[in-house]
Image (cartoon, rainbow, N blue to C red; front, side):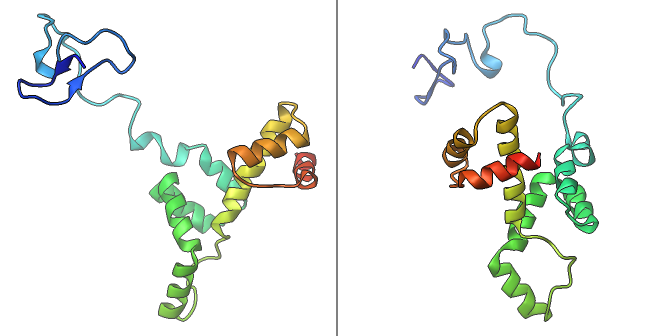
Length: 161
């Protein structure tokens, strides 16, 4: 620990990569001629660069998500859509909506697990394209996705690609 942020005792600051300590923090830099640049937002960052152009939406199309749900997903964003989908697929929500409305009034939506299986299968296909054998893929899926699959099922997925 080499430097405090202010004159009161507190948490000392160190370089996160193990380098020498910085000469100051914030407005207390010892550099007498700080750069005139800075501030503002990056030109290539922001919500306008996500949404419809997000390549993950193509996966939802490929797995057959109904157009109405694709429109909802594009409206709210991909990550928010996954949260909504997970909630809509839950047993608690399903029982609540049936009790409150007397039935579902939304377009049919496959369970969220269908998306997880779709992603798992893309992972298996990717490993197969790298030349891995079914037994190696089986171990990788068990280790990385914590999903035990039999080799026969993995070979079936490999053959579909």
